[in-house]
Length: 145
Image (tube, rainbow, N blue to C red; front, side, top):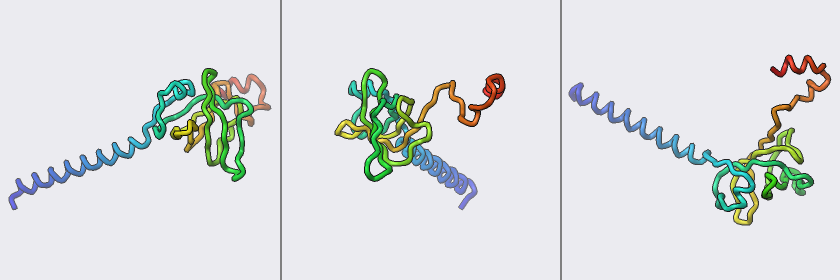
C-alpha cells in the first residue's frame, strides 16, 4: 500500500474516532442537562413529568417528614407563590433545614411530587461557619474578606 493511501486511511480512522467521542460526550451531557425551575414555574405548567430539572426554593416551615425507612424524607419546597411536594431518599446536607434555601435535582412524577435524586442546601452570603462563632467581630471581618 502506498504511503499516500496509508495517511488517508489514518485520517479517516482518526476522524471517525473524534466523531464517536463527540457523540458519546453529547449523549452523556444530555442526561445531565437540567433546567432550573421555581415552584411557581412548576405549578404554572412549565415542567412535564419525567423531565430532568433542578427545583430551587425554600423548605416550608413544618413540612419535613421522615418516613419509617429512616432514609426517605418528604418536604414542601416553596417560593412564596407556589409550593411543590418533594420526596428524597438519602442523606441530606447538614445545612438542610426548615425555612432554608435548597436546590434539588430530579424529575417530576405524574402525581405532582418532585422525586429528588440529590439535595443541595443553600446559605446566604452572610453565612458564618459555627467554628468562627466565638471569634471577635473584627477578626471575622478580617478572615471573611
